[in-house]
Image: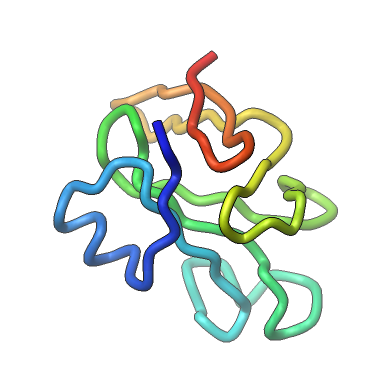
Length: 102
């Protein structure tokens, strides 16, 4: 499924746009962002609309989280993503701008 960069992750979630994603920075103050390390203004993570269930998930970038290749239009993140919200369990990768199941 193609990953699509959006302006508003909340609008994408409301509209059911699976595969949508938005980078966040510490200045955006998402859940837990006050604990993020790194410079303000740098991408600290991303939120995504899960390709499996259509609910929101998130990745934190940094020392204890995921890495990404710096490509905003076609990101690759490592390691794999497990959206374990108690209902879905989608497991896969975000590679070259595509969400791919394991």
